Length: 283
Image (cartoon, rainbow, N blue to C red):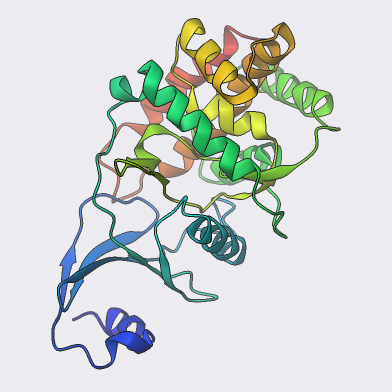
């Protein structure tokens, strides 16, 4: 067994008298490595923190606080262990269904997701903050040192980004997940769980809303807004449209940092080019 995994297991008091502990590697993961643990018949997920968290703007202490708050509220799986400063984590395994993109866009699912986001945004404030604007700037700076392919219209895109930042400067900050794409939700039947709190922090709730319905049609976005706010207003539509651009920029800059990642099995250079092209159309 990996010595690091042994050390983590040893930190869980309830497991010290366990008769049987098995460890099974799980597929996927660009930033971290995940394992399924069976401890005397109970299942847990162990995440070993990756080495590029600083480049991605991840603060493990803030993540710990967010994951604990969401776990206590029943929004996230039970948090069993979170080590600092390393950021290794153990959570209880949750049986459930992972929605496909098309399933995620179904009206009843959109309404359930809106309900989860309302609960997240109603949680008590935590200390850490989230700024997609600073993340984009940091990621672009790193991408430049790696001679990554940047769009010719980058200055115009950044001007648009900073204009939106100025427009949203006075927005009250709330507890946000900041990465609520479809693959971070699990339908547990009576409960919808939200995973991956790496980017959580006090932020703009519309960033969460724009992320969750990033690939939705206008009609589907209206369902999200009505489910979240109780009504659809033109101001909310305009804000969601603006924040689509911010979410797209944040993800395109993230994709640039995945180029050359040996764990990546996806064309992230192509992804960034496609996203930047779509953003250019909305300047």
